[in-house]
Image 1 (cartoon, rainbow, N blue to C red):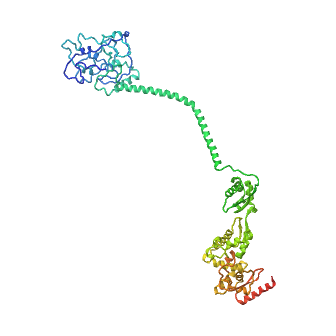
Image 2 (image 1 turned 90 degrees about the vertical axis):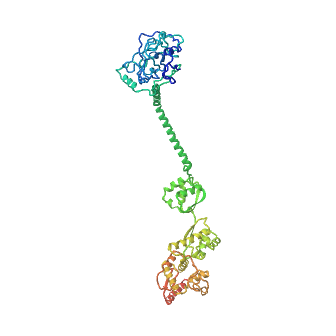
Image 3 (image 1 turned 120 degrees about the horizontal axis):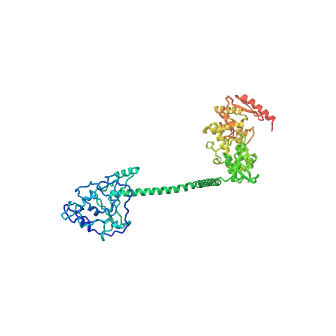
Length: 594
Protein backbone atom coordinates (compact mmCIF):
# COMPACT_ATOMS: atom_id res chain seq x y z
CA UNK A 1 0.00 0.00 0.00
CA UNK A 2 1.06 3.65 -0.45
CA UNK A 3 0.52 6.64 1.74
CA UNK A 4 -1.56 9.53 0.52
CA UNK A 5 0.33 12.53 -0.61
CA UNK A 6 1.03 14.82 2.39
CA UNK A 7 -0.15 18.42 2.26
CA UNK A 8 2.22 20.64 0.48
CA UNK A 9 4.13 17.56 -0.69
CA UNK A 10 6.04 17.39 -3.89
CA UNK A 11 4.09 14.68 -5.59
CA UNK A 12 4.06 14.29 -9.34
CA UNK A 13 0.80 16.20 -9.72
CA UNK A 14 1.31 18.88 -7.01
CA UNK A 15 1.44 22.46 -7.99
CA UNK A 16 4.17 24.75 -6.70
CA UNK A 17 3.15 27.42 -4.27
CA UNK A 18 -0.06 25.78 -3.14
CA UNK A 19 -0.72 24.99 0.47
CA UNK A 20 -3.26 22.57 1.80
CA UNK A 21 -3.79 20.53 4.89
CA UNK A 22 -1.06 20.66 7.47
CA UNK A 23 1.18 17.68 7.95
CA UNK A 24 -0.07 17.11 11.49
CA UNK A 25 -3.68 17.03 10.41
CA UNK A 26 -2.76 14.71 7.53
CA UNK A 27 -0.84 12.34 9.77
CA UNK A 28 -3.63 12.33 12.35
CA UNK A 29 -6.10 11.28 9.70
CA UNK A 30 -4.19 8.11 8.92
CA UNK A 31 -5.85 4.91 10.19
CA UNK A 32 -4.48 3.54 13.41
CA UNK A 33 -4.08 0.05 14.70
CA UNK A 34 -3.78 -1.17 18.21
CA UNK A 35 -0.35 -2.52 18.78
CA UNK A 36 -0.09 -5.97 20.28
CA UNK A 37 1.15 -6.21 23.83
CA UNK A 38 4.80 -7.16 24.13
CA UNK A 39 7.09 -7.37 27.20
CA UNK A 40 9.00 -4.36 28.35
CA UNK A 41 12.38 -3.99 26.76
CA UNK A 42 15.59 -4.20 28.66
CA UNK A 43 17.25 -1.11 29.93
CA UNK A 44 19.78 -1.28 27.24
CA UNK A 45 19.69 -2.70 23.76
CA UNK A 46 22.72 -4.35 22.33
CA UNK A 47 23.11 -3.36 18.73
CA UNK A 48 23.04 -6.20 16.26
CA UNK A 49 26.15 -6.22 14.15
CA UNK A 50 25.49 -5.97 10.48
CA UNK A 51 27.51 -5.30 7.42
CA UNK A 52 27.07 -1.59 6.75
CA UNK A 53 25.97 -0.90 3.20
CA UNK A 54 27.39 1.86 1.10
CA UNK A 55 24.99 4.74 0.75
CA UNK A 56 24.75 7.87 -1.30
CA UNK A 57 24.00 11.11 0.51
CA UNK A 58 20.33 12.06 0.53
CA UNK A 59 19.02 8.64 -0.56
CA UNK A 60 17.03 6.20 1.56
CA UNK A 61 18.02 2.62 0.86
CA UNK A 62 15.02 0.84 -0.54
CA UNK A 63 16.17 -2.51 0.74
CA UNK A 64 17.14 -1.53 4.26
CA UNK A 65 14.19 0.74 5.03
CA UNK A 66 11.16 -0.56 3.14
CA UNK A 67 8.85 0.32 6.04
CA UNK A 68 10.18 3.75 6.79
CA UNK A 69 7.51 5.71 8.75
CA UNK A 70 6.93 8.81 6.76
CA UNK A 71 4.59 10.37 9.32
CA UNK A 72 7.10 10.10 12.17
CA UNK A 73 9.88 11.67 10.20
CA UNK A 74 7.55 14.33 8.91
CA UNK A 75 7.17 15.61 12.46
CA UNK A 76 10.88 16.29 12.63
CA UNK A 77 11.11 17.93 9.22
CA UNK A 78 13.09 21.08 9.08
CA UNK A 79 13.52 23.78 6.64
CA UNK A 80 15.36 22.71 3.52
CA UNK A 81 16.11 24.13 0.15
CA UNK A 82 14.06 23.36 -2.90
CA UNK A 83 16.90 21.48 -4.59
CA UNK A 84 18.45 20.11 -1.43
CA UNK A 85 19.38 16.71 -2.87
CA UNK A 86 22.80 16.37 -1.29
CA UNK A 87 21.77 16.43 2.37
CA UNK A 88 23.38 13.75 4.49
CA UNK A 89 21.45 11.19 6.45
CA UNK A 90 21.97 11.46 10.21
CA UNK A 91 24.60 9.16 11.55
CA UNK A 92 26.23 8.41 8.17
CA UNK A 93 29.83 9.45 8.19
CA UNK A 94 29.51 11.75 11.29
CA UNK A 95 31.19 9.45 13.70
CA UNK A 96 33.06 6.21 13.29
CA UNK A 97 30.54 4.38 15.46
CA UNK A 98 26.82 4.82 14.66
CA UNK A 99 24.47 5.36 17.59
CA UNK A 100 22.50 2.40 18.90
CA UNK A 101 18.94 1.92 17.73
CA UNK A 102 16.31 3.90 19.71
CA UNK A 103 14.46 2.31 22.58
CA UNK A 104 10.77 1.83 21.87
CA UNK A 105 8.83 4.78 23.21
CA UNK A 106 11.76 7.18 23.01
CA UNK A 107 11.45 10.34 20.97
CA UNK A 108 12.53 10.07 17.37
CA UNK A 109 15.80 11.61 16.19
CA UNK A 110 15.80 14.78 14.16
CA UNK A 111 14.64 14.59 10.57
CA UNK A 112 17.47 13.91 8.10
CA UNK A 113 18.26 16.61 5.65
CA UNK A 114 17.67 16.19 1.99
CA UNK A 115 14.92 13.86 0.87
CA UNK A 116 12.42 14.58 3.62
CA UNK A 117 12.76 18.31 3.13
CA UNK A 118 10.85 17.94 -0.10
CA UNK A 119 7.75 16.61 1.63
CA UNK A 120 6.54 20.00 2.93
CA UNK A 121 7.90 23.47 3.35
CA UNK A 122 6.69 25.69 6.14
CA UNK A 123 7.90 28.50 8.32
CA UNK A 124 9.33 28.08 11.76
CA UNK A 125 6.00 29.21 13.36
CA UNK A 126 2.72 28.94 11.58
CA UNK A 127 -0.02 31.54 12.17
CA UNK A 128 -2.13 28.92 13.95
CA UNK A 129 0.44 28.49 16.71
CA UNK A 130 2.23 25.42 15.36
CA UNK A 131 5.85 25.11 16.15
CA UNK A 132 8.78 24.72 13.79
CA UNK A 133 8.11 21.02 13.56
CA UNK A 134 4.56 21.66 12.28
CA UNK A 135 2.89 20.13 15.31
CA UNK A 136 0.16 21.84 17.25
CA UNK A 137 -0.80 21.32 20.83
CA UNK A 138 -3.42 18.78 19.85
CA UNK A 139 -1.08 16.61 17.81
CA UNK A 140 -0.36 13.39 19.55
CA UNK A 141 3.07 11.91 19.62
CA UNK A 142 3.62 9.16 17.16
CA UNK A 143 4.00 5.80 18.74
CA UNK A 144 6.11 3.17 16.98
CA UNK A 145 4.03 0.19 15.86
CA UNK A 146 5.11 -3.05 14.29
CA UNK A 147 4.61 -3.68 10.63
CA UNK A 148 1.27 -5.18 9.80
CA UNK A 149 1.69 -8.92 9.51
CA UNK A 150 5.01 -8.90 11.35
CA UNK A 151 5.78 -11.84 13.59
CA UNK A 152 7.66 -9.71 16.11
CA UNK A 153 5.71 -9.15 19.34
CA UNK A 154 5.33 -5.46 20.08
CA UNK A 155 5.91 -3.89 23.45
CA UNK A 156 2.95 -2.91 25.57
CA UNK A 157 4.25 0.60 25.93
CA UNK A 158 4.01 1.24 22.22
CA UNK A 159 0.26 0.81 21.98
CA UNK A 160 -1.52 3.58 20.15
CA UNK A 161 -5.02 4.78 20.09
CA UNK A 162 -7.59 2.48 18.51
CA UNK A 163 -8.03 2.81 14.77
CA UNK A 164 -4.62 4.36 14.24
CA UNK A 165 -2.86 2.48 11.44
CA UNK A 166 0.70 3.58 11.75
CA UNK A 167 3.66 1.56 10.51
CA UNK A 168 6.32 0.57 13.02
CA UNK A 169 8.82 3.23 13.64
CA UNK A 170 11.98 2.44 11.82
CA UNK A 171 15.18 3.77 13.23
CA UNK A 172 17.37 5.86 11.05
CA UNK A 173 19.42 3.90 8.65
CA UNK A 174 22.60 4.70 10.43
CA UNK A 175 21.26 3.51 13.77
CA UNK A 176 19.46 0.51 12.29
CA UNK A 177 22.12 -0.71 9.93
CA UNK A 178 25.46 0.04 11.52
CA UNK A 179 26.97 -1.56 14.54
CA UNK A 180 30.21 -0.60 16.11
CA UNK A 181 32.90 -1.97 13.87
CA UNK A 182 35.77 -3.90 15.24
CA UNK A 183 38.71 -1.74 14.31
CA UNK A 184 41.11 -4.38 15.47
CA UNK A 185 40.27 -6.79 12.66
CA UNK A 186 40.37 -6.76 8.92
CA UNK A 187 36.60 -7.09 8.84
CA UNK A 188 36.14 -3.46 9.75
CA UNK A 189 38.28 -2.28 6.87
CA UNK A 190 36.42 -4.54 4.49
CA UNK A 191 33.09 -3.23 5.77
CA UNK A 192 34.18 0.35 5.39
CA UNK A 193 35.44 -0.35 1.89
CA UNK A 194 32.14 -1.96 0.91
CA UNK A 195 30.19 0.95 2.36
CA UNK A 196 32.18 3.37 0.26
CA UNK A 197 32.06 1.47 -3.04
CA UNK A 198 28.86 -0.58 -3.30
CA UNK A 199 26.25 2.09 -3.98
CA UNK A 200 22.98 1.28 -5.73
CA UNK A 201 23.05 3.08 -9.03
CA UNK A 202 19.29 3.42 -9.41
CA UNK A 203 18.62 5.44 -6.21
CA UNK A 204 19.19 8.90 -7.62
CA UNK A 205 15.95 10.62 -6.69
CA UNK A 206 15.50 9.69 -3.07
CA UNK A 207 11.89 8.76 -3.86
CA UNK A 208 9.62 6.96 -1.44
CA UNK A 209 9.71 3.22 -1.38
CA UNK A 210 6.50 1.39 -2.10
CA UNK A 211 5.41 -0.45 1.02
CA UNK A 212 3.57 -3.68 0.36
CA UNK A 213 1.18 -4.98 2.94
CA UNK A 214 2.11 -8.39 4.23
CA UNK A 215 5.79 -7.62 4.66
CA UNK A 216 6.80 -7.87 0.94
CA UNK A 217 8.77 -5.14 -0.72
CA UNK A 218 10.85 -4.57 -3.81
CA UNK A 219 14.41 -5.63 -3.31
CA UNK A 220 17.27 -3.35 -4.22
CA UNK A 221 20.28 -4.26 -6.30
CA UNK A 222 22.51 -4.77 -3.29
CA UNK A 223 19.99 -7.09 -1.70
CA UNK A 224 19.65 -9.07 -4.89
CA UNK A 225 23.41 -9.28 -5.18
CA UNK A 226 23.74 -10.39 -1.57
CA UNK A 227 21.00 -12.98 -2.03
CA UNK A 228 22.67 -14.27 -5.17
CA UNK A 229 25.98 -14.42 -3.30
CA UNK A 230 24.38 -16.32 -0.46
CA UNK A 231 22.71 -18.72 -2.89
CA UNK A 232 26.01 -19.25 -4.71
CA UNK A 233 27.80 -19.76 -1.43
CA UNK A 234 25.18 -22.24 -0.33
CA UNK A 235 25.23 -24.06 -3.66
CA UNK A 236 29.03 -24.11 -3.57
CA UNK A 237 29.01 -25.75 -0.16
CA UNK A 238 26.26 -28.10 -1.28
CA UNK A 239 28.19 -29.02 -4.42
CA UNK A 240 31.35 -29.40 -2.37
CA UNK A 241 29.58 -31.68 0.05
CA UNK A 242 28.00 -33.63 -2.77
CA UNK A 243 31.36 -33.88 -4.51
CA UNK A 244 32.93 -35.00 -1.28
CA UNK A 245 30.23 -37.60 -0.94
CA UNK A 246 30.83 -38.83 -4.48
CA UNK A 247 34.62 -39.02 -4.26
CA UNK A 248 34.74 -41.66 -1.61
CA UNK A 249 32.40 -44.09 -3.36
CA UNK A 250 34.31 -43.68 -6.61
CA UNK A 251 37.53 -44.46 -4.84
CA UNK A 252 35.88 -47.49 -3.34
CA UNK A 253 34.47 -48.55 -6.72
CA UNK A 254 37.71 -48.02 -8.67
CA UNK A 255 39.18 -51.53 -8.12
CA UNK A 256 35.83 -53.06 -9.05
CA UNK A 257 35.70 -50.96 -12.21
CA UNK A 258 39.22 -52.03 -13.15
CA UNK A 259 38.37 -55.68 -12.62
CA UNK A 260 35.20 -55.35 -14.65
CA UNK A 261 37.12 -53.61 -17.44
CA UNK A 262 39.69 -56.40 -17.50
CA UNK A 263 36.97 -59.02 -17.57
CA UNK A 264 35.22 -57.27 -20.46
CA UNK A 265 38.51 -56.89 -22.33
CA UNK A 266 39.36 -60.55 -21.80
CA UNK A 267 35.93 -61.58 -23.01
CA UNK A 268 36.32 -59.36 -26.07
CA UNK A 269 39.74 -60.82 -26.92
CA UNK A 270 38.44 -64.32 -26.40
CA UNK A 271 35.49 -63.65 -28.66
CA UNK A 272 37.77 -62.29 -31.36
CA UNK A 273 40.06 -65.33 -31.14
CA UNK A 274 37.23 -67.84 -31.20
CA UNK A 275 35.41 -65.99 -33.96
CA UNK A 276 38.60 -65.74 -36.00
CA UNK A 277 39.23 -69.45 -35.67
CA UNK A 278 35.67 -70.22 -36.69
CA UNK A 279 36.01 -67.95 -39.71
CA UNK A 280 39.31 -69.55 -40.70
CA UNK A 281 37.81 -72.99 -40.37
CA UNK A 282 34.89 -71.90 -42.50
CA UNK A 283 37.05 -70.40 -45.25
CA UNK A 284 39.91 -72.91 -45.01
CA UNK A 285 38.71 -76.09 -43.31
CA UNK A 286 41.16 -78.03 -41.23
CA UNK A 287 43.39 -80.30 -43.32
CA UNK A 288 42.09 -83.84 -43.32
CA UNK A 289 43.90 -86.87 -44.58
CA UNK A 290 43.03 -90.42 -45.48
CA UNK A 291 45.10 -93.36 -44.36
CA UNK A 292 46.46 -96.19 -46.43
CA UNK A 293 47.08 -96.76 -50.13
CA UNK A 294 43.49 -96.35 -51.26
CA UNK A 295 41.20 -98.53 -53.33
CA UNK A 296 39.72 -98.61 -56.80
CA UNK A 297 41.10 -96.71 -59.78
CA UNK A 298 40.62 -93.28 -61.31
CA UNK A 299 42.41 -91.27 -63.99
CA UNK A 300 43.72 -87.84 -63.05
CA UNK A 301 45.12 -85.36 -65.55
CA UNK A 302 48.03 -83.09 -64.68
CA UNK A 303 48.03 -80.12 -67.03
CA UNK A 304 51.07 -78.27 -68.25
CA UNK A 305 52.03 -75.50 -65.81
CA UNK A 306 50.18 -76.91 -62.80
CA UNK A 307 51.70 -76.16 -59.39
CA UNK A 308 51.76 -78.57 -56.46
CA UNK A 309 48.66 -76.87 -55.05
CA UNK A 310 46.90 -77.22 -58.41
CA UNK A 311 47.75 -80.92 -58.52
CA UNK A 312 46.53 -81.31 -54.93
CA UNK A 313 43.21 -79.68 -55.74
CA UNK A 314 42.79 -81.98 -58.76
CA UNK A 315 43.44 -85.01 -56.60
CA UNK A 316 41.02 -83.78 -53.91
CA UNK A 317 38.27 -83.24 -56.49
CA UNK A 318 38.71 -86.84 -57.68
CA UNK A 319 38.59 -88.06 -54.02
CA UNK A 320 42.12 -89.38 -54.32
CA UNK A 321 43.11 -87.40 -51.20
CA UNK A 322 41.00 -85.82 -48.46
CA UNK A 323 42.53 -82.32 -48.60
CA UNK A 324 45.30 -80.41 -50.27
CA UNK A 325 47.38 -79.67 -47.16
CA UNK A 326 48.87 -83.10 -46.44
CA UNK A 327 49.74 -83.65 -50.10
CA UNK A 328 51.51 -80.29 -50.44
CA UNK A 329 53.34 -80.85 -47.16
CA UNK A 330 54.63 -84.21 -48.38
CA UNK A 331 55.53 -82.82 -51.83
CA UNK A 332 57.51 -79.91 -50.36
CA UNK A 333 59.66 -82.42 -48.51
CA UNK A 334 60.66 -84.21 -51.75
CA UNK A 335 62.52 -82.27 -54.46
CA UNK A 336 61.52 -84.88 -57.06
CA UNK A 337 57.93 -83.66 -56.77
CA UNK A 338 58.88 -80.66 -58.90
CA UNK A 339 59.48 -83.04 -61.82
CA UNK A 340 55.93 -84.35 -62.13
CA UNK A 341 55.16 -84.36 -65.85
CA UNK A 342 51.90 -83.31 -67.46
CA UNK A 343 49.71 -86.23 -68.42
CA UNK A 344 47.11 -88.67 -67.24
CA UNK A 345 47.86 -90.73 -64.15
CA UNK A 346 46.14 -93.86 -62.95
CA UNK A 347 45.44 -93.27 -59.26
CA UNK A 348 43.45 -94.92 -56.49
CA UNK A 349 40.77 -93.24 -54.41
CA UNK A 350 40.98 -92.25 -50.73
CA UNK A 351 44.75 -92.37 -50.49
CA UNK A 352 46.86 -90.53 -47.98
CA UNK A 353 48.68 -87.46 -49.22
CA UNK A 354 52.08 -89.12 -49.00
CA UNK A 355 50.88 -92.27 -50.79
CA UNK A 356 49.39 -90.21 -53.61
CA UNK A 357 52.68 -88.38 -54.07
CA UNK A 358 54.63 -91.63 -54.28
CA UNK A 359 52.26 -92.96 -56.92
CA UNK A 360 52.59 -89.81 -59.02
CA UNK A 361 56.37 -90.11 -58.97
CA UNK A 362 56.19 -93.66 -60.32
CA UNK A 363 56.62 -93.52 -64.15
CA UNK A 364 54.36 -96.54 -64.61
CA UNK A 365 51.48 -94.57 -63.11
CA UNK A 366 51.33 -92.15 -65.96
CA UNK A 367 48.86 -93.24 -68.63
CA UNK A 368 49.99 -92.32 -72.15
CA UNK A 369 50.90 -93.78 -75.52
CA UNK A 370 54.46 -93.01 -76.52
CA UNK A 371 55.00 -93.09 -80.27
CA UNK A 372 58.33 -92.46 -82.04
CA UNK A 373 58.24 -91.22 -85.65
CA UNK A 374 61.62 -91.73 -87.39
CA UNK A 375 63.02 -89.23 -89.90
CA UNK A 376 62.10 -89.91 -93.53
CA UNK A 377 58.77 -91.63 -92.78
CA UNK A 378 56.05 -90.91 -95.27
CA UNK A 379 52.56 -89.90 -94.13
CA UNK A 380 51.34 -93.42 -94.81
CA UNK A 381 53.92 -94.93 -92.54
CA UNK A 382 53.37 -92.26 -89.87
CA UNK A 383 49.66 -93.03 -89.71
CA UNK A 384 50.40 -96.73 -89.46
CA UNK A 385 52.81 -96.09 -86.58
CA UNK A 386 50.25 -93.94 -84.76
CA UNK A 387 47.58 -96.57 -85.15
CA UNK A 388 49.89 -99.19 -83.73
CA UNK A 389 51.17 -97.08 -80.83
CA UNK A 390 47.88 -95.56 -79.65
CA UNK A 391 45.39 -98.27 -80.57
CA UNK A 392 43.59 -95.72 -82.68
CA UNK A 393 41.76 -97.08 -85.73
CA UNK A 394 43.65 -96.37 -88.96
CA UNK A 395 40.42 -95.20 -90.59
CA UNK A 396 40.10 -92.37 -88.08
CA UNK A 397 43.68 -91.33 -88.69
CA UNK A 398 43.23 -91.36 -92.48
CA UNK A 399 40.05 -89.26 -92.19
CA UNK A 400 41.86 -86.70 -90.10
CA UNK A 401 44.88 -86.63 -92.41
CA UNK A 402 42.86 -85.44 -95.44
CA UNK A 403 41.38 -82.47 -93.49
CA UNK A 404 43.91 -79.63 -93.50
CA UNK A 405 41.79 -77.59 -91.06
CA UNK A 406 41.59 -80.49 -88.58
CA UNK A 407 45.35 -81.04 -88.65
CA UNK A 408 46.24 -77.34 -88.43
CA UNK A 409 48.18 -77.38 -91.68
CA UNK A 410 49.44 -73.89 -92.63
CA UNK A 411 48.34 -72.30 -95.86
CA UNK A 412 51.83 -72.24 -97.41
CA UNK A 413 51.85 -76.08 -97.30
CA UNK A 414 49.39 -76.08 -100.27
CA UNK A 415 47.20 -78.62 -98.50
CA UNK A 416 49.92 -81.25 -98.57
CA UNK A 417 50.42 -83.04 -95.27
CA UNK A 418 53.59 -84.81 -96.45
CA UNK A 419 56.69 -83.28 -95.02
CA UNK A 420 54.83 -81.49 -92.12
CA UNK A 421 54.57 -84.37 -89.66
CA UNK A 422 57.72 -83.70 -87.74
CA UNK A 423 59.66 -86.84 -86.76
CA UNK A 424 60.01 -87.09 -82.98
CA UNK A 425 58.78 -89.03 -79.95
CA UNK A 426 55.29 -88.19 -78.80
CA UNK A 427 53.30 -89.10 -75.71
CA UNK A 428 49.64 -89.26 -76.47
CA UNK A 429 47.19 -89.49 -73.60
CA UNK A 430 44.24 -91.89 -73.70
CA UNK A 431 41.74 -89.15 -74.55
CA UNK A 432 43.82 -87.71 -77.42
CA UNK A 433 41.94 -87.74 -80.75
CA UNK A 434 43.54 -88.54 -84.16
CA UNK A 435 43.26 -84.93 -85.23
CA UNK A 436 44.96 -83.80 -82.01
CA UNK A 437 47.81 -86.23 -82.67
CA UNK A 438 48.40 -84.84 -86.14
CA UNK A 439 48.05 -81.28 -84.85
CA UNK A 440 50.90 -81.82 -82.40
CA UNK A 441 53.19 -83.08 -85.17
CA UNK A 442 52.38 -80.24 -87.57
CA UNK A 443 52.86 -77.69 -84.81
CA UNK A 444 56.27 -79.17 -84.10
CA UNK A 445 57.35 -78.67 -87.73
CA UNK A 446 56.16 -75.07 -87.78
CA UNK A 447 57.95 -74.42 -84.51
CA UNK A 448 61.21 -75.82 -85.92
CA UNK A 449 60.99 -73.64 -89.03
CA UNK A 450 60.36 -70.67 -86.80
CA UNK A 451 63.42 -71.51 -84.75
CA UNK A 452 65.55 -71.85 -87.92
CA UNK A 453 64.28 -68.52 -89.18
CA UNK A 454 62.90 -69.80 -92.47
CA UNK A 455 60.60 -67.25 -94.11
CA UNK A 456 57.08 -68.49 -94.75
CA UNK A 457 57.37 -67.96 -98.52
CA UNK A 458 60.38 -70.32 -98.70
CA UNK A 459 59.20 -72.95 -96.28
CA UNK A 460 57.51 -75.23 -98.85
CA UNK A 461 60.70 -75.40 -101.02
CA UNK A 462 62.95 -75.90 -97.96
CA UNK A 463 60.76 -78.74 -96.65
CA UNK A 464 60.66 -80.35 -100.12
CA UNK A 465 64.44 -80.31 -100.64
CA UNK A 466 64.97 -81.44 -97.03
CA UNK A 467 62.70 -84.43 -97.71
CA UNK A 468 64.89 -85.37 -100.73
CA UNK A 469 68.06 -84.97 -98.68
CA UNK A 470 66.53 -87.00 -95.86
CA UNK A 471 65.65 -89.84 -98.31
CA UNK A 472 69.06 -89.95 -100.12
CA UNK A 473 71.57 -89.48 -97.28
CA UNK A 474 72.13 -91.07 -93.92
CA UNK A 475 74.56 -88.80 -92.09
CA UNK A 476 74.47 -85.06 -91.54
CA UNK A 477 77.75 -84.63 -93.43
CA UNK A 478 76.43 -86.46 -96.49
CA UNK A 479 73.16 -84.50 -96.20
CA UNK A 480 75.01 -81.21 -96.59
CA UNK A 481 76.87 -82.49 -99.70
CA UNK A 482 73.66 -83.90 -101.24
CA UNK A 483 72.00 -80.55 -100.67
CA UNK A 484 74.85 -78.94 -102.60
CA UNK A 485 74.45 -81.40 -105.51
CA UNK A 486 70.75 -80.51 -105.72
CA UNK A 487 71.56 -76.83 -105.77
CA UNK A 488 74.17 -77.34 -108.49
CA UNK A 489 71.80 -79.32 -110.74
CA UNK A 490 68.94 -76.92 -110.14
CA UNK A 491 71.30 -74.10 -110.94
CA UNK A 492 72.12 -75.48 -114.43
CA UNK A 493 68.60 -76.89 -115.13
CA UNK A 494 69.68 -80.46 -114.93
CA UNK A 495 67.12 -83.10 -113.92
CA UNK A 496 67.57 -84.37 -110.38
CA UNK A 497 67.03 -88.04 -111.43
CA UNK A 498 66.51 -89.34 -107.89
CA UNK A 499 65.35 -92.97 -107.46
CA UNK A 500 63.58 -92.01 -104.22
CA UNK A 501 61.21 -89.76 -106.13
CA UNK A 502 60.46 -92.55 -108.61
CA UNK A 503 59.57 -95.00 -105.87
CA UNK A 504 57.44 -92.34 -104.11
CA UNK A 505 55.57 -91.71 -107.40
CA UNK A 506 55.12 -95.44 -107.95
CA UNK A 507 54.16 -96.09 -104.35
CA UNK A 508 57.02 -98.43 -103.88
CA UNK A 509 59.84 -98.66 -101.43
CA UNK A 510 63.42 -99.75 -101.97
CA UNK A 511 66.70 -98.50 -103.31
CA UNK A 512 66.31 -99.54 -106.94
CA UNK A 513 63.99 -98.69 -109.76
CA UNK A 514 63.08 -100.15 -113.09
CA UNK A 515 62.95 -98.50 -116.48
CA UNK A 516 59.19 -98.68 -116.32
CA UNK A 517 59.18 -96.92 -112.90
CA UNK A 518 61.44 -94.22 -114.21
CA UNK A 519 59.00 -93.65 -117.08
CA UNK A 520 56.16 -92.77 -114.67
CA UNK A 521 54.83 -89.37 -115.69
CA UNK A 522 54.14 -88.37 -112.09
CA UNK A 523 55.21 -84.86 -111.14
CA UNK A 524 57.10 -86.46 -108.28
CA UNK A 525 59.21 -88.49 -110.79
CA UNK A 526 62.39 -86.43 -111.10
CA UNK A 527 63.45 -88.65 -114.01
CA UNK A 528 60.39 -87.45 -115.90
CA UNK A 529 60.21 -83.80 -114.74
CA UNK A 530 62.77 -81.08 -114.31
CA UNK A 531 63.16 -79.27 -111.04
CA UNK A 532 61.73 -80.03 -107.64
CA UNK A 533 58.59 -82.12 -107.14
CA UNK A 534 55.44 -80.24 -106.05
CA UNK A 535 55.97 -81.28 -102.44
CA UNK A 536 57.96 -83.35 -100.02
CA UNK A 537 58.32 -87.07 -100.46
CA UNK A 538 58.88 -87.71 -96.72
CA UNK A 539 58.98 -86.00 -93.37
CA UNK A 540 62.46 -84.63 -92.86
CA UNK A 541 64.09 -84.02 -89.50
CA UNK A 542 65.97 -81.03 -88.21
CA UNK A 543 69.35 -82.22 -89.58
CA UNK A 544 68.00 -82.35 -93.13
CA UNK A 545 66.50 -78.91 -92.75
CA UNK A 546 69.78 -77.50 -91.51
CA UNK A 547 71.67 -79.19 -94.40
CA UNK A 548 69.43 -77.51 -96.94
CA UNK A 549 69.90 -74.18 -95.28
CA UNK A 550 73.68 -74.66 -94.98
CA UNK A 551 74.94 -77.00 -97.75
CA UNK A 552 78.62 -77.97 -98.09
CA UNK A 553 80.22 -76.02 -100.91
CA UNK A 554 81.37 -78.12 -103.92
CA UNK A 555 81.10 -78.72 -107.67
CA UNK A 556 79.54 -82.09 -107.45
CA UNK A 557 76.82 -83.06 -109.82
CA UNK A 558 76.62 -86.75 -109.01
CA UNK A 559 76.44 -88.96 -105.90
CA UNK A 560 75.62 -92.66 -105.25
CA UNK A 561 75.45 -94.87 -102.14
CA UNK A 562 77.92 -97.64 -102.77
CA UNK A 563 77.16 -99.51 -99.49
CA UNK A 564 73.58 -99.27 -98.27
CA UNK A 565 74.45 -101.16 -95.08
CA UNK A 566 77.01 -98.64 -93.97
CA UNK A 567 75.53 -95.70 -95.83
CA UNK A 568 78.74 -94.94 -97.61
CA UNK A 569 78.13 -92.36 -100.36
CA UNK A 570 80.47 -91.16 -103.08
CA UNK A 571 80.31 -87.87 -104.95
CA UNK A 572 81.57 -87.03 -108.42
CA UNK A 573 81.93 -83.98 -110.54
CA UNK A 574 82.04 -85.76 -113.94
CA UNK A 575 79.91 -88.50 -115.41
CA UNK A 576 82.93 -90.84 -115.74
CA UNK A 577 83.68 -90.60 -112.00
CA UNK A 578 80.07 -91.19 -111.26
CA UNK A 579 79.94 -94.33 -113.52
CA UNK A 580 82.84 -95.83 -111.59
CA UNK A 581 80.94 -95.27 -108.31
CA UNK A 582 77.83 -96.90 -109.80
CA UNK A 583 79.83 -100.04 -110.53
CA UNK A 584 80.72 -100.23 -106.83
CA UNK A 585 77.05 -100.09 -105.90
CA UNK A 586 76.17 -102.84 -108.42
CA UNK A 587 78.86 -105.01 -106.90
CA UNK A 588 77.27 -104.61 -103.47
CA UNK A 589 73.92 -105.63 -104.97
CA UNK A 590 75.43 -108.80 -106.39
CA UNK A 591 76.89 -109.50 -102.98
CA UNK A 592 73.54 -108.85 -101.27
CA UNK A 593 70.87 -110.28 -103.63
CA UNK A 594 68.14 -110.15 -101.00
